[in-house]
Length: 212
Image (cartoon, rainbow, N blue to C red; front, side, top):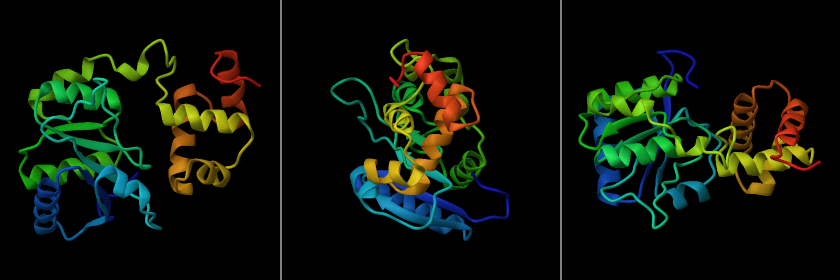
């Protein structure tokens, strides 16, 4: 999370469409000298590239036709809150259910986009006024199959916590950075309503999420 308004924003830009990605990168570079794009590419490209710099926010352009064959969307899990750019309300519902912290339309102007990125990096939720009603939409991740709203990745992390693995070991097992592993561990603790790793494992075992 961004510590202050004066701190530079470290951004990861995820977009499958190279034209959209290039346009976003240019627009942001023209707007802000305090914005640092530390990684940019498709989700696969960004996940495969490792950076020492930790992101404050992820800008995710879902594209014009974002739905997967399964009908569900998967937000980038890169260790930072996600601001999604969506083409319509339906895509906004999918992005929100996938874990996006903010929603804007894909044609948003550069200035409000920058303001939204900084707000999301500080832990706030940002919605285009036309998408604000989606805040009340029940999220798919909070379905009975995932009692505490854990994402698939967080459930993997929880299982590794039950094995007693450290953040570094979790990162190595899942082939992610240690910073990302720590982000997921903290998210698991928050969603289970505990402060310690051992408490998370005990609570998860009682809920049937892990087996000890």
